[in-house]
Image (cartoon, rainbow, N blue to C red):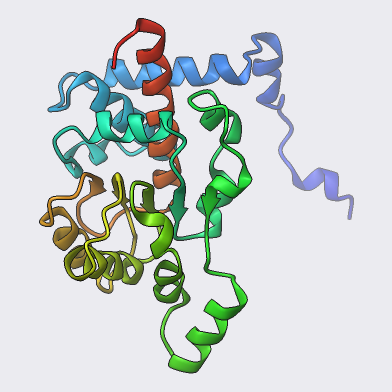
Length: 236
C-alpha cells in the first residue's frame, strides 16, 4: 500500500504563515493584544496585570485571573531584587533551564548561570533523600538556607519545599525578598500556599492546586519586563 494515499490532500496551513510571516516578537506582541481585547476587566494594578497577562500568555488560561494573588508591594520588591542582582533559588531544573539570562541581564548585567541556584540534583541532597525517604526538594532548600535571605525563592514544582521554606520563615527567621509560590499538584499543595500567604513575606502566588514551572518562569520574565519599563521611564 502506498502510505501517501492514506493522508488527505490539502494545502498545508503553514503556507498561510509563509504568505504573511511574523517574527517571534511580532507573534508575542499580537498575542498580548489578543489577551487585552478578550479581558474586559480585572482586579489588578497595571504592573500586576503585566505579570498576570504573561502568565495567561504562557498557558492560554484566562481563569488564572481568579486565582493569582499578590502581597502588597510584591512587584516593587521583586523588581528591586532583580535590579540588585539578587540570587534566584528555584525548586526544579525546569525553572533553572527556562529562565532567560538575556532577560535577567536586561535588568542587571551581572546575572549569570550561577545566579540561578537549584540543589535538587546535588549529590548530598540525592543521598539524604534516599536515606530518609523524603523528597529531594526538602533537602535542596535546606542546603539553600545561606542564599535565601534577600533572594528570590521560586516554587513551581514542590509543595514540600514550600512547606519547608515556611518553617524556615517561622523558626529560623529566613527572609527572602520575594517568594513565587506556584507548586502544582494535589498533596500538600493548597496548604503550602495558604500558609505562605499568611506569614507576612512578600509573595506572588497561584491559589489552589494549579501552578507549575512554566508559570513560575513567566512571573520572573514579567518582573524583568516591568523593571526594564520602569527604568526607561525613570520610575522606582
